[in-house]
Length: 253
Image: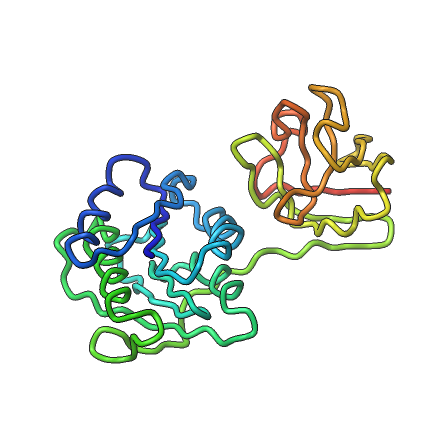
């Protein structure tokens, strides 16, 4: 399997699929092409949440604000998976998740002079992913195309400040439902369900499900990602709480 993820929207991913099908009959799965444009951190967060549910595969990821510059292209072996994409940090959080207790291996990809300086998804990453798939995931090795490196760009997510009575965190992403997903671990709510907490100076009920409050009412809950989430039953939490990615969140008992 080869998966494709990007911020391309339509119609560019079709060209990537065409390039892959010229080289391999692998099954190609589109994860999403609707990541926020050029938002590396948001893409990295969602990839870490989504790709671990796939069986072993080559994952081609293109969220690439630096396309056409001297930024490197990478292939990252992470457990039974290989990730291919730009050297801007987008691959590393999910690589660590996929690798588990195994070491990740990072390779610079030599891609020569591609046809376009603005569409490396088609001209660099898609053909590289297809070539790795054809060489078998566990067998591609360092050579003329792949050179091991330890100088790649990393990306780590901010850690919350968790105290006994007060927590300071940050909004990581807002999903398409408007749910505000923070970096605060859900376990901090373990003994709070059915109570109220102060979120950015506003009292908010803590509930296990959206429907535990009336339609249009806001709540604090734990999302499927395991983090504290600020939401509205049948509404948009981002609008109600006035929060977006990168904003600070304080939670008080």
